[in-house]
Amino acid sequence: MSFFNKVKAGVSEAGNKAKTVVEINRLKLQNNSKQNDIDQQYQVMGKLLFEAVTQGAGPLPSEQIEKNISRILELKSEIDVNLQQIAGLSDVKQCKACGGNVAIEARFCPSCGSTFEASNEPIRDVTPSSITLDKKE
Image (cartoon, helix red, strand yellow):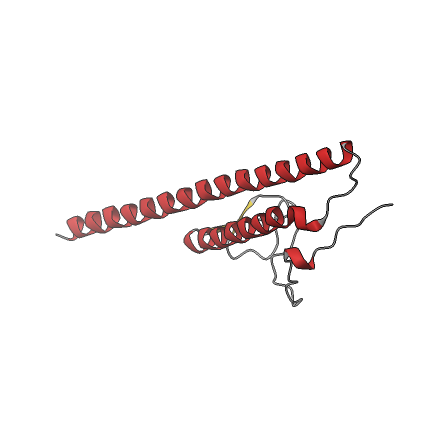
């Protein structure tokens, strides 16, 4: 009977790992979609800038691109939340410097040497109203 209990436990563990992998892949797909949305927002802002410059209007007023900036910041925040969820589900984390996978308990990336220790600096608020565009005259 002990053999069957071990098999049952093994099957249960494999099922749990499969669920984890499915959830991680779902979050990664969401992040890819969000990154594509970010790229589209960059393209829209680039097109607006190009049209303004070619028409002699000069730099864009910040009001014209605030919506794009807000959307980009929102999407980046959502990606960060997903990355935290992925880290909580897996036994590896991703190095923000080189993108390599590193054991969850590692303090340094073996590929690039970047540290994973949290900094004591407060997070700076970056909202569209706090962003100023340099205007060259």
